[in-house]
Length: 182
Image (cartoon, rainbow, N blue to C red; front, side, top):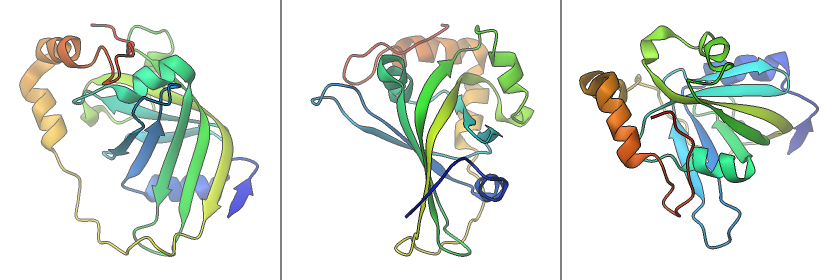
């Protein structure tokens, strides 16, 4: 294990090459559920050596946003599934930036238009950058991105997504409120 003082240019380039990352959050309550979510679709950006953001599309739940609103704790993890083995964890404090927030448009500009509509963008102040060997991570061949989520969102349209978020994304499975514009 190695702790780095910041996200170096080399680590930033490596992150950009990874097709998948995971985010983990948890409520303060020891009885609450820990959430771990896989993410893909060119939704992650290193903004500076101590700040990252990810574009959060509408999904079945909104656990991460509820946890971040309650306590801000988040860990992001990247694994090398090809090339030399490596695991990278970014520990930090995250905040949800809704489309109505003044910072949303400048953050949105970092992501490709083809992603569609974001439910929110999560910005993380990175407090610890840690790499480890990754020897136990399997080698896997990347075949491509799935279009299921963006296709689903396109079929729903803006009004349908808004209704979906109102009905499914306002509280976590533990009953914590999640921020929303809908």
